[in-house]
Length: 306
Image 1 (cartoon, rainbow, N blue to C red):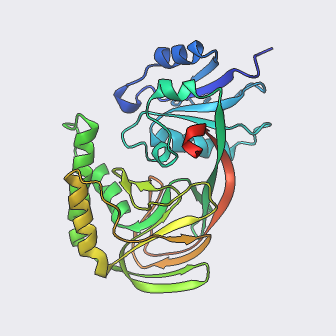
Image 2: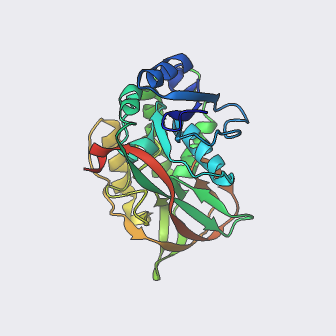
């Protein structure tokens, strides 16, 4: 019989963070703190298969992409026992973990597993596409899906560090912000209707997006609310100024206040849309977006909730 108090399924992306933490290093950290590691690479299709009933929780080691992929895989599985998720982030941006106040120090995170709190984590649901779509970070229109596409089309073979990657992303985002044509948008936020021409709308479940931009100061992925960020044509210069200041290393708040929301209906007359890191390409969109409250539980340090 496995030790039910110490068995952890570790799903690890060995390539994340330029291989910053190896399988051997993470397993050793876990062993030092008395945890038995049930290891599987995130590259394997079996990452979420044959999970022992005694497993205490599932640890995800990697960047936002690995975390997102694993969580979506968990949501699609009908596991016999619901298990909390522990995050060991060491990707480039680590927006998900940072929004939860989770350190990028893997050893420190493992050391808190014996004395932790569970934090609720919501999931967004979007209806109106060919099939229902779900997101854990954000869903949005305009600038950011355009940025994702631009970066995918850019030759980055000479990019060697996370700092250089952030610099490139911010420069590209500034170029896009200056040139992006505003689109007509109709949005209903818990019954309140807004209609304007926008360059960006983001429905945030976490506080950060893209190259570690904190678009919503108060966003809490477990509070049962989205934070909606609407950047109209009239806000273009403020957006440009914000990106320029962030690129200079300034720590400044986002200039446009977010709007809390539970239920959203939105029509966007444009092709640019993303759901987390996935781009959609349709001529226009009419979506109904709702929040699935407390669908997940994430392990955090008790001090984070203090």
